[in-house]
Length: 181
Image 1 (cartoon, rainbow, N blue to C red):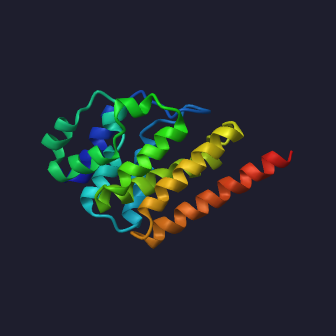
Image 2: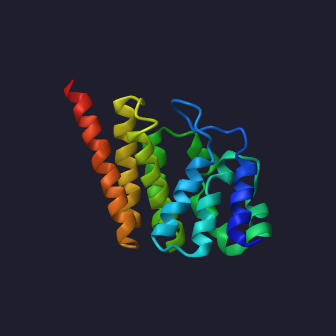
């Protein structure tokens, strides 16, 4: 079994029974799969694509970075570590957490920046779609934080830069329309 199929199987097991926060019962595994697809389209390395599939397992499951390293190697584990919020960050308000994520990703390797930009892009896409029922204030705060993160990741992939910009424009348009009501 090659590393990428192994990563999908590993992440699917780790996220079994988890659902995205928000409307509906969207299986959580859909998100890392969408992020990995964006990283792949952006021309990311195999390590970056594997890290995209695994980017939330340490934060959201009992899986440890040591397990990631033992299974997928030091490079993938390093990328996942760069993408993982500390427990202190998880307790912060969204705006403060996003500001720290932007600071952290600025010092991260290129592969982690690709994954983070794809992650933020997919989250904005979901805020325009399946999670479009979140309050306007929540979506505005998320958009501002995601934009600060994207600024730290810009220039690595024209495809991802444009995908993020398109998702941000769509979300801003949606917010503007709701605020006019």
